[in-house]
Every structure is written in structure tokens, then in C-alpha cells.
Length: 506
Image 1 (cartoon, rainbow, N blue to C red):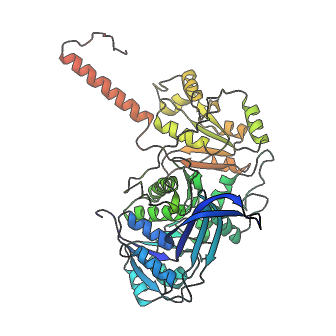
Image 2: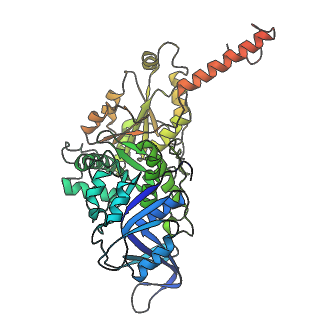
Image 3: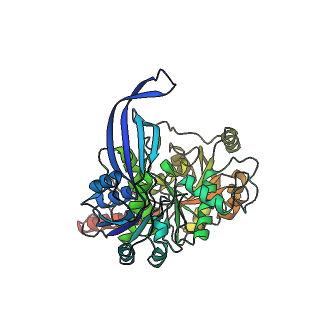
């Protein structure tokens, strides 16, 4: 466990049960499937699953939760011990149980029972929170977080995973992780949205469909301010997570989309993010690692799988993997941009645009554009003209002329069209295209999105996407220059300086 800090999890534990069988007929007395040959699997649920996953990552974990002496509670203790230290809070009834009935791996019915709620905090629990090096709250609305709210305000949690039945996170929480539907519910309770748009913004342009990404960004920003949290990461399922500090959001895409069982993915996300923050990662690094871990968790079968996959990302250097294009993607010509935008919007689609010089196309560019394409139904790349690149980058740039840069971009399966702008910024072109989403790549810290206010005029959303670490055109040019200089020096030492051999690129 070297290098991995201990974690205290405060929250509401459940006992989860999966009854898995096959269904190939309907019952004779009602139009319901008959699930036969069922096998039963018991596992920790709720805060207990979050704690268990953190322990599987190699951490010392303490779980503070409501737990009595009923049969379900005794079963849960056996599942958790001795891997996890349990600090039990007194409860008013039996441990809640959640039973899923699955046929061919797909849930067909869920049964809930058990009404136990935390009655009060204990001296042992308060002491455990006060002395905790790192705290994660997994609030399923059954009283554990509320009972310890005063002491949690003293020892502010790194991560708070909320539930609509629970209370708000304590002010100062470093990262709050609602799912998309939960964020919508929380934000509506603060200030109800109207006409499919976030309150306080102008009416969307009539050509635009409802923009779910824009709404998620506005909701996250409102929650940051209302909860007085340092940051909010709205999990988007196969779409990754949207991180907000209250201003321009950072979208961390999932490395791949999986159609597996997503049960427990939010717990995997919260456990990974809290662990990485406890180990010293930045918030955006923790979110990137959590997205990767949750994606792998779903791919492995989710909470119902025979074994859980440990967190993929480990340590402060966690980064999101590069998404790959879908198998059906094919290169598309530019065509008429107005016609493309009209066709996409007529079918209810989302228009995405991204911009840059793209002088020496590298893996960071490709990863950014692939991720951008996954946000909507077409991607238009806005590229600087040669004169614009020279004004921005200086003499000697671009290395590749506009015609070559356009040709390379068109060849990417994720690019639907390429548009050129001659100004220093793409704002005029953006105003003409009026995309639903504008994507900018780069590091989150200190990032500026001057296009954000422009997008707001018609209800669009500007987002940041992380580049692949260490990839840049400037770095590529520096390495190439260093390699050329080294080769020239070696040739001179051998008495061949000035000879233009077959590999000379002068």
C-alpha cells in the first residue's frame, strides 16, 4: 500500500443482491417474463461498495455507516471484514436491501426492502472523521452524512457523492460528483429551468435544438455557487464527466463507450477520484483518472461482475485515455457548410466546432478531434490561414501550407468539414456557423475561453477538452531540430560535412 493514503468513507451502506437467470417465455397468468434457473450473488452496496472498491485499490479504508444486528447487516459485515474497518452508527431499523432480477444480463425488476436510518452520531465516529487524513461522503439519503454534518464541516471532505434524498454537501467540499440526472434535479430545486434552457440566459436561437451539454454546464456552475463547493463533476455515463469550478467547464471524455452494466459506476468514480485526491492529484487529474476507472469498471461487467477491476489510473499523473472513433466513421468531404449545418439541425442533431492551426498534426490533435466528434452529430474544424498562423506563431510558420493542413484534417474519420479563417481569432466564423458546442483544447488551469460569451448569444456551450500530455507541435519541431543538429554534428566529425547525401532534407 506504499504511496496510497488511507481513506474514511462516511455514508449509507446497502446490501445488494442479484438474481440472474434466463427468460425465454412469458408467464401464463400475466404478460411478464419468467426468469428461470436463477443464481444469487450478494455484494456490498451504496457507501459499502464505494469503501470496498477503495480497499481493492490498496487503501486502508474505514467505513462509518449505519449498521445494526439484523440478518442483512450481519451478511454485509461478513462481506466487508476484515478488509475494511467498520465504525457502526445506531439505526432505527434493518439494513436496506436492493434486489435486482436479471435475465440474460439485463435487469427486468428491482425489489427494495429495509427501512433502517441512522439515528445519531457516536463519539467514535466523530473522532474517526476528525482524525481522517481524507474523507469521502457517499450520501444515499439515509442519515449518515446528516448525523455527522457538523464534524464534516470541520474536516471538509475531498469528495461528496450526493443523492437527491440526501442533504447538500458541506461548504468547502473539494469535489462533488452528481450524476447527470441528479445534477438536473439539484439545480431545478435551486432555480427551475424553463423552456429547455438554463435560467438567466437568453432565449436560444430558433435553429438550435436543446443543448444537453450546455444545460449540464450551467447546472454544474449553479451548483458550485449554491453549494459553495470548490468544484462539481457531473458524470455523463459513456460521455465521461463535465468538471466545473463555476466558470468554463472541462469535459473529460470516456476512453471508450461500453454497453455493459453501469450499476456501481458512480461509486467506482467517487472512490477513484477521492483516492487520487488523497494521493496529491489535482482535481482535473483525479476526474480524468476516475472517468478511466469507471469506464473500465463498466466494461468488466459493473457491480454485478464476479470480480471488480482495480482503478486503472494510479497516482497524481493520471490522464484520460484517447477515445477511438466508432467503427462506422468514414472520411467526409467539406461540402457546403451551410447545407451540412442545416441537415444536422433538421434531424435534431448537435453541431460541434473546434479550432486551431493544426500545423504539425499529432496524437494530441487527433485525440482532441475524436473526443469533440463524440459530443455531437458533426464536427467542423476551423483552421487558421497561413497568414493568420504567421501572425500568431512568427516567421517560419506554418511548416505545412494551408492546402496540406486541410487535406490531412479532411482525411480524419472524425472530421466532417474544414473551414478557414484569416483573422487572428475564429470568432467571425463561429458567429456564422453558430455551433451548439465549441471545443478548445489545453490545460484547465488559467484557461480562457473568449468564445464562451459569443456562444451564449444563441444558447451554445464552449467547453475545454484535455490534450494528451506532452504532445505539441512546438515540441515536435524542437525534437526534429535537435535531431537534425545532432546528425549534422556526427557527419562533420566523420569528415562528411557539407555533403548532400540521400537523406539530406535541405
